[in-house]
Every structure is written in structure tokens, then in C-alpha cells.
Length: 393
Image 1 (tube, rainbow, N blue to C red):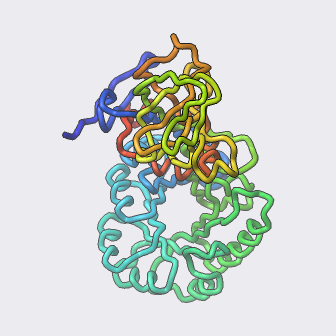
Image 2 (cartoon, rainbow, N blue to C red):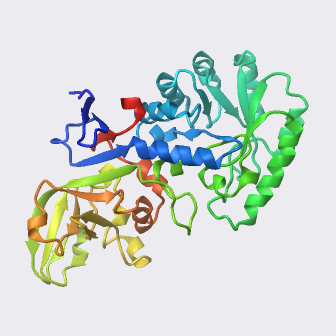
């Protein structure tokens, strides 16, 4: 049975949109703060001057929901969106009828009619794709992707320069490349790619261009050009390693307590009996696991990563950090809540998995991954609610 979205309000008069399973039926909940998202975009847009900031909303807006994220950003002034797939582009078009929508992951012959029908702009990165658009595009705009050192998608610089002098069959209006090491500002690769991109850009003349992703925006004005493409930073994740994260947290993930157990010193907990308790312990067993996108590698014990990193992930409840106990399983995760006063925790309460108190990227590091993977892997079983946002008013 489908559940229709409901619009309610909080005591702070911030609108709340709820979607998905009813909160009483779900084992966890996601709170997505559209005001924080918009503030992040405005901050990145300001850093992108004299250019502008677009928004990368691939992977269902990094797991946050295209249908809610795109209208909020459009209301804030965002006019350009990047997706990976044409299917995502169609969803963005529904949410933002007048936006420019760029599709990054190539062009297949059988998908071309969908691009033309919905005014999606393909990002072309090979002679093969250029030929497809020449056949189907009817001189509609396209973008050219040049590979300046990523060795992934895109024309090689010499190919792109050669194409620039003979671009008769298609109408490129946009030139882009992608930084490989922008999250490491000291990397020589950044400057090498920039110099390569500048040479290609000179061959294309007066054409709009884009080089900087989230981390690239923080490399300085040389990397800005006409349009930046922030992704992870929009959603509150770390863009640059080893520095304080200036972005506001957007997503709060929480799991609901199913049972609180008392165990004695010397007992074991969880699959494989990998955790032996060194004292009398209270365990909060919660209804979220790796089927919900909370990684097994974040376990407190019993996974290979713990031989390299001693400590697993933590949750947060009643003003205290609580460690994951034993192995994260498909549907359940246990937390050591011994230090939480008994009158401050009950069955049915929620433990924060990440959000304002437990940073997204701290959980990612404990799991040996990155914040991108946590956000885009969020499962469908959470109760979702959206707070704030001009688009909901």
C-alpha cells in the first residue's frame, strides 16, 4: 500500500513533508533539512563567482530525493543540474521544467529520442557519441567532455582540439572536464589538469565551460570558470580532506531501539561471538542494518577493517556517543548504551547514526569508505521527512 506525502508543521513553523513508510512502521528515519541544503548551495554559489554554481543531483540527489531537492534548489535560484542517466534527467525535468539538465554518463543511440523530447543536454565524450547526436540531435545543444587526466570519460585533449576546428555536425554550447585529485589541494595533478583544460578551452573560443566539482571550488578562482558542479558539499559532506568542513549537515539518519538488553561480563554479543564484553553491559538493539545502507564494515568487531582501524562507528543518544557493538547485521545493529542513564533511554527511542552530532564522514571513515557511498546507499525502509524549504511553502 502506498503512502501519500503529508505536509505538517513544527513548533518552529518550518514545513515538514513526510514520505515513504509511516513513522510507526519504519525501523529508522531520515530527516533532510532543505534549508541547510539551500544555505550550502548559496555558499558554494558565492564561492563560484564570477561564475555560477549548478547542482549535481545524480543518484536520486545523493539519496536525498530528486522530487524534493530539485524544487528547493530551483526556488533558491539554481538553474543548472547534472545527472548521470537520462532517466534521472526526466525526473529532474518534471521537477524543474525550465532548468538546463546535463546528462554525464554518455549517449546511447536508443536513448537519444528521450534526450530530444525532454530537452536534456548530453555530455559527449567520444566520436561515437558525437555521431549519434549528429543523427538525432537536430542541432540541439550538447556539451563536450574532455579528459584532462582522469582517464575515465571524455575526448583526449588533442581529439577535443581537433574537433573544435571542425564542429559542424553538432552544436556544442558547453565544455567540461573533471578533476581527479581536487580533494587533495597539494596534488600536482590539479595544476596539470588545469593547464590542459585551458589549452582545450582556448581552441573552443567563446563557449561556456566548467571544471570544478565540490572540492575544485575550494582550489581557488583559477578553477572556477563559468559553472561549477558541486555535489557532495551540497548535502553536507566533506569536499576536501584534512580541513574543517564548512558545510551544514543536511541529512540526519536515525535508527529505532527495538530492545535494551542487560548482559554480564565475559558474555559475547552478535554473530561470530566476536565481541567479548569486558564488564556488565547494556545493549540497545536497533532496527537498522546493512540492508538499510548502514555498512557492515562499520561494525565494532568481527570485520577485517577492525584489524586496521581499532574503532568502529558510533551513534548518539541523550547527549552521548555510543559505540557499535559487535557486527552490523542485515536488519539490526547493537550499541553499547551502558553509559547512558537508564531514565534517558527507552524502547522506541532513536539513536542518531549520522547527522549534527555524528558527522557523516566520521561514520564513513570508521567503515573504510566515503560519505558519498553512505548517502547514495540509503535504503528504502527509512521513514523520510523533509523540513524547511521554500519549495514546501
